[in-house]
Image 1 (spheres, rainbow, N blue to C red):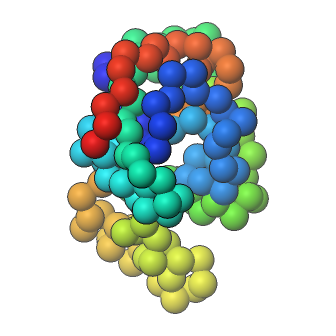
Image 2 (image 1 turned 45 degrees about the vertical axis):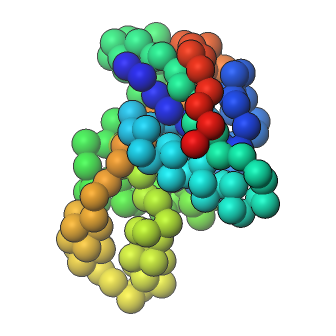
Length: 160
């Protein structure tokens, strides 16, 4: 499968240590199967950093590794209670996990307000999930171990 990562530079050798800790699935290297989502993220990164470039790095990843017992994998098939609790825990730095790979929907900036309302007790869990399901959700695959990251093979970088 092809995976895409949006940034302001070509990322030929991804590092987990460069990731922020308070993200959807915790500190790791994030990619998506959607070029559109990676391109959007590259432009967001460009604007936030003041960089002159927006770049999508393209990788190849053997999807069968998601079922390989060599790796501990957590998959979320959509927005549900477990996904919501997992991402809120990771974003608030209350959840630590030992997964090598985590795959599921992106809780991007457009969803953040809804998730914030849930965290502040303004929305119930059920109402939050219903609202989040109304959005077009992209997927993400995050890498949380050096071993799993070695399975990601750089193909090219595209300036967008």
